[in-house]
Image (cartoon, rainbow over all chains, first blue to last red):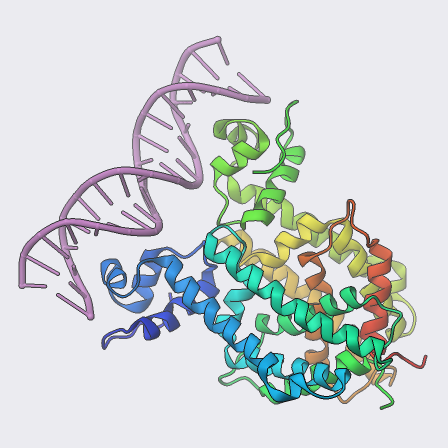
Length: 197
Length: 197
DNA sequence: GTCTATATTACGATAGAC
DNA sequence: GTCTATCGTAATATAGAC
């Protein structure tokens, strides 16, 4: 299934294994049996560390959300011209997404069947909304085009950024996080034809 | 769960119900019981129409794939300057995606647990590859910027387009498919700052 | 075409020994 | 902290009546 390991688990180290399997098979498609095989311990041993499958999900998406909301607290995201703050947040989103790849991947894939999933989706919408406000301010400043509706543009830009989880692989991949961030910022602000900055 | 209906089902009309539920709960998160409740008939009646859950998935993703590959057969996608063909395919992808929304949504979410899922992922990769070739040709023509790697740019553009399934709602939504297609083409080729065409 | 009833397997979770 | 054994439930799928 995935890599097995021995030693002795902490909730944290078990989480890393679980999130990997969740991302391979989907959360719903992963059984406790799958997790136990991947972790190399029995099902009941997993229950010694966590209360159940949903706790693993909650820990994982919390980590992702903390990373994303942390961006908005950083100084360059809070002060300065809106378009500059937007560019900073865009770049940092790519960096957080690649740094916390498995956790953010799981966050972006929850469907809403359980309470934890619905909570995660709600928090995510909150984050999206705050970035949308930033784009709105940049448009009001006249620093980004006004002919595309703010809400629509935000959704499309988020779509591009979030899609990175579908293919980015940190170890052994030919692409560094910074290169991807550069490309995203260039593409989002300048487009395929290239910008005249 | 979702809308129930009576009459008498065909594999086709049953598919529409099933795909809706699959997209709400995820394929793995959907049981035959869920489907029977949504369709308003018993589980065993569903088995009268289809061999099982996986056949419904296969029919759904086939429809999505047919729509996408159909684009590449259309004349404007085959003749003319590469950048123009690319723009045409980009626009048509948005149109097919919104027209066949539930089917494409399901296609984009399969994870690879079953044979059908792996087959769908393989076919999808094939389509992506063909569009990547188009972008490559446009870059060789000097019609799109060459400072962003073709493979990377393709992935990001696909990410933006595919993300539309996450929020687009045809009936009652304030956005028409054509408006979204316009915005995507503008954003992909011109960027947030706007293009000097 | 649809139903009720049921076979069979897999699931999440617990009990209790070591 | 880990195990084996098992409980109760829910899953996919089938049998056979109407």
